[in-house]
Image (cartoon, rainbow, N blue to C red):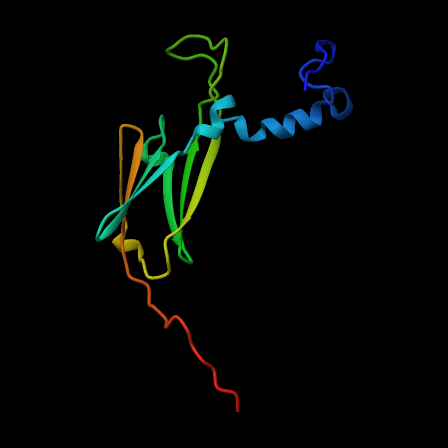
Length: 147
């Protein structure tokens, strides 16, 4: 649907004001309009393990945490920038990088322990290796007797 240009970006901007625009931008503070493309993940299945590759460009291993709780593996990447406006690089006149946190969770099962998971960060890609464990298989059909 075409909107007249006199209404700025969207006809409804005039009705909802700045609050609506701010709410839509809250998740984009870390990487601007490209925030939706961050933490892209590939999962590879092997015979004895799963390999999870997560894109985290610009993060160091000190800024990334992995937590395992109730069968969920949570990856958190937090970026903090110095608030110094002057320094070795001179006076800051424009800043497009912000402070923020990215987080993603994966269900890996209750059988996996912290000691069985390994992870390493190379060239902005976090590589996580998870063991493949067979789940206890129940019979497909069970009949329950009525007394």
